[in-house]
Length: 362
Image (tube, rainbow, N blue to C red; front, side):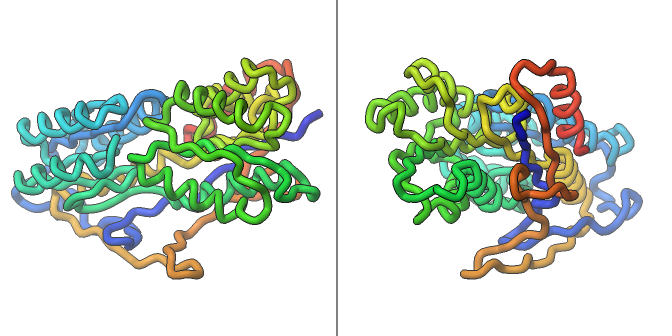
């Protein structure tokens, strides 16, 4: 029986303003600013639909939390940019024109959206960056320790290759979109684990996190490196891992190398159990989404948000509480990881149950 695992981010979320961690909000609904009660409107902008988390989890959780915090008097309006920065800018402008009270923004292009963030600021509408740090005068930022996610992915590759891993092992890196600042952080974390231990033979920044672009990039890498010379593939998320696997199989690879992922999508969990994908990283989206909703409502109602500077890593980089540890050989079970045991052909009812538990915050 093959031992397979999903790495789980147990407590890696950080809520920040100018690199400070928000610990919570102060005050109650009765203490809200007299100009704003519970009858509020929160605009929610998500970046794309390729990753199923935004439509299936993030927005529904935010919507439910806003309703809960406002005694069902507050509402949310939602739009998805579908990986198109111009479309998202138009959606955000519409929310500004409609005079929503606050906007939660997960940017398609963190740089391109800056002008529209400024327009919201000029209209007196606070903007909270969600998951990805947008440029412009944002009021707060909610995300995870993204570099740590990359570290776990990189470390998992080294562990998969075993003690004999060295610079003769050629790795392909399929990074995320160059317009997403998180992608650069994932890549930096992975490189911190891979550099000097293996050779990065090819590295791609994948436009829009597109599985189709990842598939095309992987086909290009196969031509350059050779199907028998790829020791492992770093895929920044699960959706791209699906495209990578398709390219490898179409290219005649019969024994798939270790392939990483992120988001613990159901399709990825199924691939892990089937033995096609090596691992995925799950992040507790319910905590992130609920925290964003709390910050949005607190901002509108005039409640204070407590901030505290995080501890620093070596080199002065922020280190946020919590950790990720890859499961599998050498990684004993603890509160920060959950292991899946399975073999090819196993019935997937248990996988769906696991996926529901993960997305429900366990």
